[in-house]
Picture (spheres, rainbow, N blue to C red):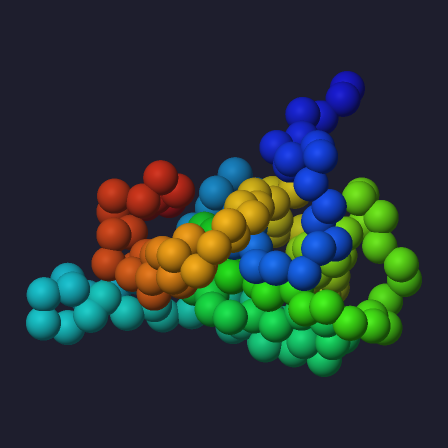
Length: 162
């Protein structure tokens, strides 16, 4: 069976720029965190589960493996993670990327592999959603979305109470 790709076919994903990523848990199980507080006076706050703590650790460490990227912002929601990733110009310590093995794809793949190794099982949905950031306004809007995502959890398209 051929999987349908949601990536832009004509776009070079090795181009320096910013990318908004969404990585979901398998079957969108709420296993990474809990959102607590009403948001009126006390939050809401993201409380990471043990699996979420591991994911957080590897998001923070991946810049050690990829000198050509930086994580500009992220949030670990109950069943998904949003990451704003900046791909920089310059030499990379990793193999020459291809369209199938772009910097963005390798980041997601490495992140999932490191987490799964520590988890002892795969918890991730296959693939990831990516959005190419077009300009500074787009960047700012996605960064704001990341920081505000816990406030809108119950209205989020990925919301689940299981």
